[in-house]
Image (cartoon, rainbow, N blue to C red; front, side, top):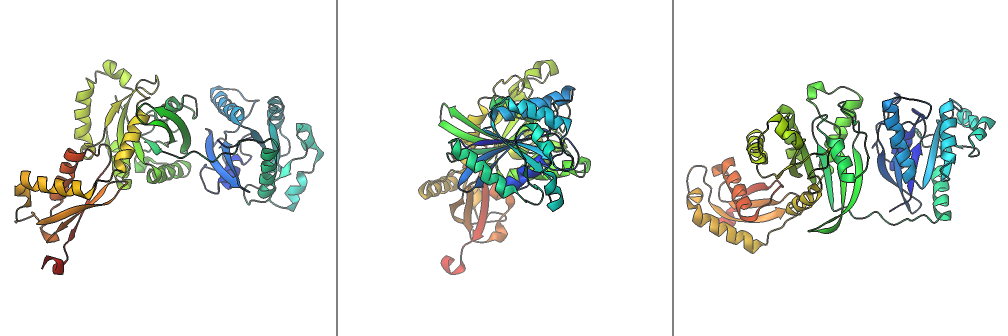
Length: 452
């Protein structure tokens, strides 16, 4: 929908630092350690009236070999294929390296617009290094000296980008509206990245059997057509696997976990991913508690269900009963069974997310609430009698959405027991559904003069 810019270069030249500078937020992890970025990372930049999609990539070394390096090469080449313009980032303090030459030779074959950047030009001395004739050997003219760390030269670079965009008349439509934001949450190695790739229909993140391959949240915008809802757009975030707090390593992993928790605040719906064979342990319960604090909609997704027969897990209904005993506070959450690796039943997840998000935004007319309360008093009149922990209720109104929130008006809050609020919530679900979304029930005392 917008011009796509890919930031490429060898490891540790400052690509992620530049990515964060362009987005004006710390979205990608940065570190002096080579190889911090392992996946493509997407974001959006706005400059001089122009929206730009920016892709951060893993360090690309076309002279290296090995399975992991092949993964990184494939990811970076994927970004290059998607890009309209390429930013080739080099380290001005290191000079032209063999990896730079190999990458430049490959990029020349793409015939795409390219800006050569001499990063780490943090001061007048290092900026002069960008004038050395050796840079011309890369075949893209003199580099633009920039400092992703302090921002020097980045504005000039963006001016050049916008100039190329307008010269080439690259499309610049506004970003499509987001219909639902989905966060994929789960313990390490439960299949989050595999699920994201299956939903996207392409490889967006590296999938590995080694836990903690994903080091930072990844945004993926999916445009799809749902049979029930028509054309829609979903923003899906693949997140870092969260372990027990005592096992979270300091530094990079700890930062990644904090980014994941931030994504919970942005999410409309969470896919809580459970490994069918591993089941639910204290880690899933802790994750469920963290999700509950943020109040998004929740769908429990049981992954690797294709292995159920081999693992002797029983039938789906039996497994649902097991989940209800382990996660009793998510009895209102839909449960679905998938095999992310093969794509089995993955396609229905987006439709479920739209339905849950609609429930989060649902607002009941006051006349329906009044009729519900009258019906409740007649059927469950004993719960509304005077007595210990049985407050006199005058009425109820809906006071919010995302999630639905209701306020009951009572005579004396001292007579209110938490079980009574849960009773109201359960009856609301019986009557109106609200599948997949939490419901908040609050209470206030009626004004004394009004009661009089």
